[in-house]
Length: 158
Image (cartoon, rainbow, N blue to C red; front, side, top):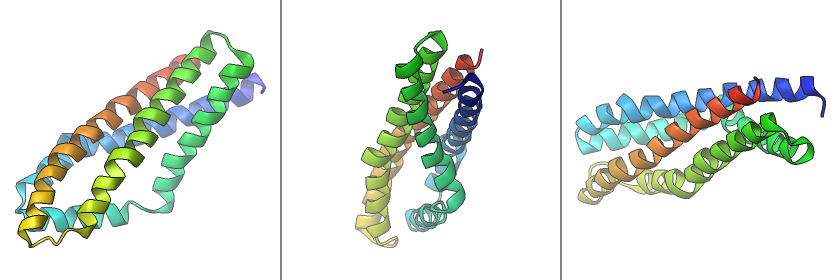
């Protein structure tokens, strides 16, 4: 792969990582706190709505497009090596493990459980309480690894 193409893909991966880290940062730092202050029924209904609305082409391009770029850039490391390549590999690992895998293994199942919860029920309230603890914890992981991926992709550009 040519240097110019690797540079361009690294810039796009940095932007994608930053977009995802920013999205997760918003939820970790105030959106979930605000939703948690609502009565459980309202918080559940709001988060259920958010979880449906986020599944749109813009989110998919940012989330999965950056995952594809990360895979390509990890391959560049294995094909070309070098110091910049180590940064590419690290950025790809942070993104793929800390965002994609964490999302699929932890956040999505919690979202699915919340989607099945009846907002006005006692069971729904119990799901919501656990959701606020567990989902937010894993979202913090996604925020930090998204920032780490961004830093690594930027460092690869040096």
